[in-house]
Length: 103
Image (cartoon, rainbow, N blue to C red; front, top):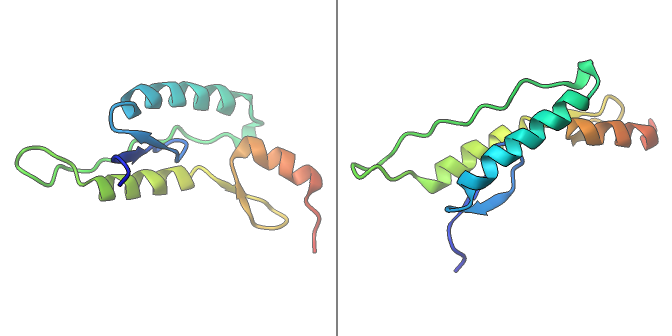
């Protein structure tokens, strides 16, 4: 059995419960750097961390619902291609559109 993992709400990758608190601030800084370099029409608002309330009196979180909300947040960062409809991160969309051909 794998140790519990938490999904980053910014990039959608899985991290351990101890390292997610280290990863998220660094990921947000990287997100800001990359977002600032995009053309104005592809810039996005800063992703907001999903709020999930504790489900137990001891203050523990439901890891599945936390991960579900983080995954949805990460997927909302994707932008569809105008030609084929596939979704990409905005910086990758620019590269994709150079080779995307209409059917």
